[in-house]
Length: 584
Image 1 (tube, rainbow, N blue to C red):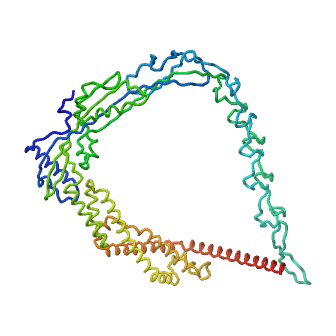
Image 2: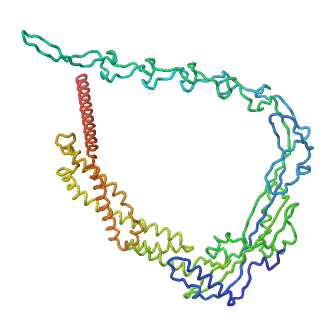
Image 3: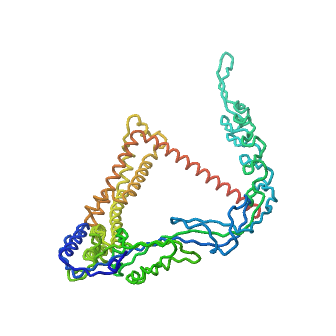
């Protein structure tokens, strides 16, 4: 049983030596756990002026409800209900007893003399209705062949024959034969070129498909060539179970009393309002369990004990409001359990450097208010960050924002994270700028050297010496191709160098903007040189063959494209000329 003292919202606490030592040690422990905090001995330097015990109370209410109402039902007939109640007001009936534990369950009680059994109007008492899928036919169109009974041959696409590649579809091929001719005493061996019918396609230009033997299709394996299959919904019967009576053929209508048991869990916190305005404490108090000071159970309804009157007054009437809020419209409370736990929090005021602050001591741990000397230091660090940012001194801004972010002080976290993200983005831009400068300089001054290197030297191994043969396909385009490949490689390196290659080392050593730019310049230059050396080794070991093939293929594509353009222009000219002569 709780006493008045157990539920008082505030106690005056004597600031004796033990309490003062306890507070100072907690503040020092908190300050020492914050990185980059110069005020590690804050607890020794503060002046504590006032301490009070302001407990927080956790109120937990478990409520079991019961609700009753009458409803009409129409459902398939599966026999009598077996449990009937008289036609009386719902709350006048003796129904199922309340459950022993909190639960959600619903019971149905049929009212006597309200049942009516009748033939199902949907199926007329047969228990089945026409299948909606096959329309009562029992069979549906085969989806594999679309009802045709056959499927196209995949080899010839249903044509029965395929293009003859021996004669290119012309039906004839060229051949040469040698014939001996006599002119007087002179014998000559003459080579004769002639065209004959293609032996592969018999002069037809197309070969009979060997997969389907020229038919172009196969009998559908799903429907066996019938074009229709058994309906999967009705199994070929053409009728399915009636959805209204579930195949029972008859329906039953009746009126019933519904009895529903439901429950709720409700938790509220009650404390001195100053505790909720004291910074981080309002966010972390739920981590602590506290200890139980009051418990009451009413197994017959709502808690209305007179014992709560005095307790409610001590809590400013909040308890009564909470219990009243548990009443639900249309529901009766049949069981209620109340538990009150208490969490001791010591609220104290202190001064430091001429300013006043508040804090909370909770289970031996210190939690600062919205403003504390440490949070003010973090704010100064963030102000310096913004000042450096406005002066475009991004390394210094990143250093200070990183300090504020590592401190992770309540009330400054969001601002510190925002500033750190901005400073980090600016530092990344410095690295990217250095890489861009190096890329541009290499494009202007290094690309001509790369072209000259592959045009004059192009070192390769002996078995690849033909790559430097002027008669090799694509020889004239090889230096330009390798130069373009080198530019692509450097572009990929530039994309990688938009972000620092070694972030920790980059951020630790970059103290000036120029150093950040130099980091990007050197990183791009070294990585590009490494990538180009690797590419040249691959070419020297046989990659030039691939380059030649690619160059030849590109040249072929260009020729085809040029021919298409010429043909289109010629056709357009012919059409325009024809239209001109037709009308003019």
